Image (tube, rainbow over all chains, first blue to last red):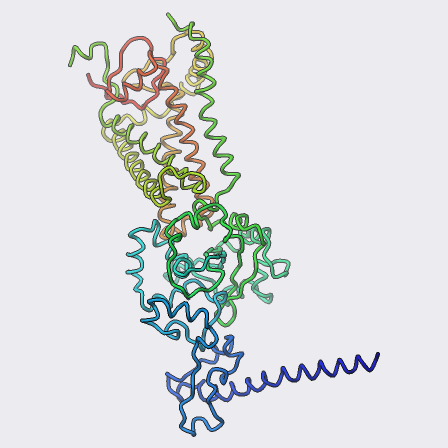
Length: 348
Length: 227
């Protein structure tokens, strides 16, 4: 019995060693590559890789040679051009969706996605996502074309990532970002997304998530959301909500139902049952923390500055409104009945 | 003209009548479109959601402009705003109670309305108080909250100061419900004239029969009555 257990341990150890070898090898290779390519003066702007932005990406975890497999130990002295793998080698489905669109005639993958800086949708803010689109689509053109048919066009454009409507993704989720009032003394108005440094300033030695996630369970409850909203110390902060696709699609067709306002502006569509809080990370990206599941509309009620006409109405408010309107009929019905019954008294 | 309007007084000048019906039509449009905007999953009276929003915004704009014209007319042209709409000390001391007693008791016994409208005092003390609340509190607040809601982005800081978009939308909704509740009461009181359509005709033609039967003067009127 003891012998069996020892053999199992040995196998496990061997397995872990096999796993660890390629990881350490690729880490070594990446350091070698970045030794030169991390210095713009040495390789020039075109071949420069910003290590700070590259290392946190998923692509970096795979190591440089995964995509640049022809590179040799003699590089660059061997004079050979280094191969680049095609994005579609890995991202086949998304790539094929994209290649079928008109966009593919005008822009290749890397025009929008720098492979050495790319992050998943959950790590990027809405305005950053939209930067890819505004490289070609002028802001004024976007505003004008939407204002022709979309009520509150500027509000929609400022609040939503373009891909919320302009992809064929069916599912959506709500993402709340912490924003803060800009200082008038610096000549700035309105609100901006809070950075990691901003939040660290108020969280002190604690993690920034402790500002909202009071019990530290990596999940935001409705009560915690309310506590944050009501805390006078955070009066310059507020949560700004947006809708993002829950899955990535590169079929950039705008589905007909996106022109129907009730696709979003109807009470509690199924797609709005999942929500997250996006917390800024030290490296300038975001990480998501789940917000109490299944209480989407309640969550939104807990956020004073998130209101989506038609979809986030309060049932309590509806009842109060109905009572008020019914009150308007007391006089016609009550007085009218007595008036009818006593009509003979006024025949003189 | 003189013969046609014998025993009649000119109570509602043209500006007042235009304002009244513009307001009435506007408020009904706002109510219907507002209902669709709040309950898009149940109400589709005006077709698409977008058309309901455009109609609501346009009607809101018309009502806000007509409110401003009403205010301008009574304050600067007719100069009777305070006299007509602000209750006097006597109104508080006894006038309101007297009027309440009439509406809820002596009216049914066939007594005459203690308030006799004259061109200088169109509204009874109860009407004054109600219209004061409606025209100086409800209407400005509902219009203002509507203006805020149609300009969320530029007015974001102010909205946050008020307590957030949700508070603002809730306030707009509840104030609008109060205005909607006023409609059936208003229309009912308008039928308490000599005949049920008497006051309504007056608000259309401007002329009201003199003499008995001024049991209620429900509409806005003007003291600069001419003959």
